[in-house]
Image (tube, rainbow, N blue to C red; front, side, top):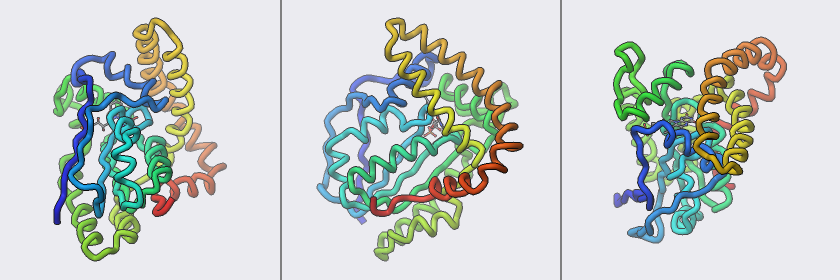
Length: 271
Ligand SMILES: Cc1cc2nc3c(=O)[nH]c(=O)nc-3n(C[C@H](O)[C@H](O)[C@H](O)COP(=O)(O)O)c2cc1C
């Protein structure tokens, strides 16, 4: 089997890890789909049997490098009529961003044969703290010695090889169209309906924030205000929303949520 890795090189440099404002500054462009400039891409072949698109969600959107890839004519041409696997490395809120990836694959006539979502299994508020610690210090260790290690657990990363082996087998046996169904049985995508609901509301607010920030001259000031809003939303609003969701919304919207969950777990094989 021949394979190649295509690594995107951004024209400008990210200052991760280290600067709080850089972390939050990414929000407006992520949410409004503004690509960063990338260096010219060269690919070894015009056509591949299978493409793996590995990406991260940032602010409930594809990350800035992922957006840059999605705007690249070279990559859009490569995925046309070609089986594509998507792999998300996330904290725990990937559904809204995945939808943008799905629509991109559909628009470019890719054959979406599998989706694997790796996530941090720590409770939502804990991972919100630890991911920031990790991104801002560059240390993937236990914050203050008491928090869990940030990010996807080492065991989950190690066992992801099993999904890779299943994909290789499906490719060799020309059964890629069955891959996602088999992956789902092994837990490739696990949707938490509470987080799915929170995400669907939060993205609307992020869009409003992005519009406000992009329209302001004093961007840094507004990014800082957004930063404090986000902390407030995470630690004060979201626990209240979770209680309301569990007691009132989930019982009322049970069927609709179940349908949304099935959709979020799936892939659009052919458009
Ligand atoms: C600026 C920024 C925003 C992020 N926003 C989200 C998000 O909305 N949802 C989510 O699940 N993870 C979010 N994350 C976490 C990343 O998706 C990812 O889990 C983390 O960067 C570690 O990725 P790695 O294991 O590939 O290094 C964010 C990370 C960064 C740097």
